[in-house]
Length: 93
Image (cartoon, rainbow, N blue to C red):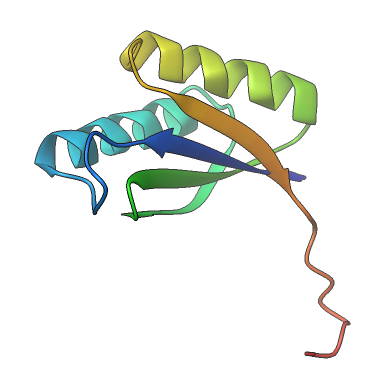
């Protein structure tokens, strides 16, 4: 699995407002209901909100997630990046 992080810029510089939280909920629902991937978590703060998504394949996952964001929120500015795999055997620094 590939771990994608979808980062969306917010109108303000703080936490998401109720409308932005509603959008995030609709994005999460669409990602999961359309079988794109499994949402691992989400958050907001410092002028952005994010959604963590585990997908089977990077290129297809990026394309599908981007299409959902453009469909449900055509005016938002967003990025999608790959997060490194966590090494469960690594010792904490």
